[in-house]
Amino acid sequence: MRVARVRRRGPADGPRRRAGLALGLALLAAAAGARPAAAGPLSVVTTSTDLQALVEAVGGERVRVESLASPLQDPHVLDVKPGQLARLRTAALLVRIGLDHEPWLARVLHAVGDPRFAPGSPHYLDASTGIELLQAETPRLRGDAAGHVHGFGNTHYWLDPENARPMTAAILAALAGLAPGERAAFEASRGRFLAALDAGLARWTAALAPWRGTRVVVVHESWPYFARRFGLVVVAAVEPTPGVPPSPAHLAALTGRMREAGVALLLAEPYSSAAIVGQVAARGGARAVTLIPSVGGDPEARDYVALFDVNVRRLTAALGAGR
Ligand SMILES: [Zn+2]
Image 1 (cartoon, rainbow, N blue to C red):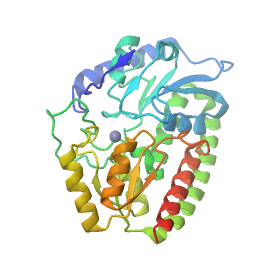
Image 2: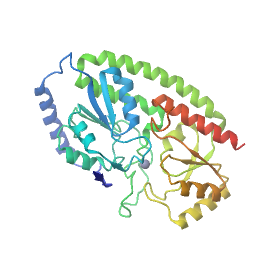
Image 3: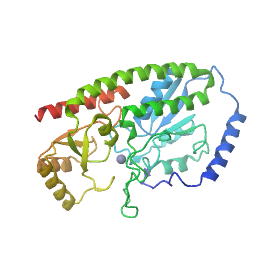
Image 4: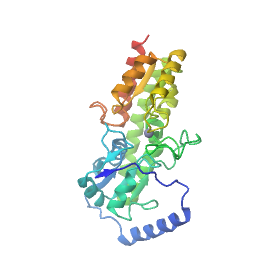
């Protein structure tokens, strides 16, 4: 089915109604009884491969996880297949990025029509809860274009590896809520994941240390969390508003400013328009590098830690080549 971009209602909408719904769902869950100890793996559906990787990092072989979006597509736009709807109907848990990251999910949930997948339910996890959002204070143009996203703050928060701590804490709580007998196993798995993450953070910070303060231009605003963590400075985006393609006038002004400012690097995604990336890099005098925003977007980016290994390697190669 084709699912158009639809603006999700804001986080401030209807707290009283949501609290009532949460209580009702909690009572329903309690009435359904505890999960049998001998049950098979928990079936989990996520909206992204990054969330899938984090659920697998905590759940190990006790979960079976499927992502609705593939890693090589624009996460804000998605064609959900009937088989995926069927999988969601039988899932024990839905994990999403939240805010307006997945404008297509409202239509998917409407089609599935399952009250378990609603805020406050133990079967629904919005991973943005507890994340300190960037660009949440930026005034956004509301009425202009259908493709506009990031209306409540930047949603690409999984690209700061430090955010994997609160995200996996929330995942652990959700999984343990559904399978209380497995809590210790989930905690042990998360502990191993965080140890690997800490080692990774030391490695990535050291590799990018010589490049702190480097000014970059991005195609889409996917990288503010990554840039803040590792000291890159995002000075402009090719998209004038997230999700809105640039006009020729915008591109001309941008590439002029890039030359004046001596911007060395243009960060693109695998699904960026190759024509626009080539044009901006050539006219702006910058080197284009394609980073991988999601696990599985490169065969070597097979899990969450490997995703950052791949991106840091690509970045240091591009920066080193420009010297
Ligand atoms: Zn975005």
